[in-house]
Image (tube, rainbow, N blue to C red; front, top):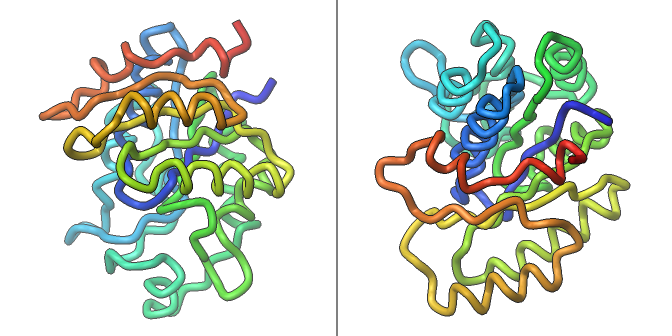
Length: 225
């Protein structure tokens, strides 16, 4: 069984990084050595560091360099392929996969590869981040932002993952903003229609605490026990 999973979301701003940090915290609490990679990040500080990547670095147990966690750090907080084009960079799924495999082959028992935005976010004129997940051949964890439209977005994403030949290993219901109307009914519908186990439900936490959120998630479906 693979020790790595690709984390994607139903959209941008649904809390992929927060949930990734919570999963890392849950895995560490279970005694696992953890690591994460944010292959492509758009939007950096003056030091060329992305906030999401820094959060992942802070939550993992294994001592990785920033460049290992975020090999492609793009300056502008815009679509990755546009940001890369503006900086004269060429993004290729194959090269990103090689970097990810280096971390996957390291000392960690539990590795997360966090995407950017949703499943079909382009990294070039020919490839999307989905191509990276396909090259890695890992299970996918879907973060569903519990807000209006989430059912359609979640089902379309699950369908795309399946069509790409990958397994939706599990999904997390995350509340990135105000509590949505008919929350329970939407959650029940998602549980009935999504072809994967619900790993947990995380309410809006202010401030967000990865350890507290991690206690709301179950790794049993991922780890096979």
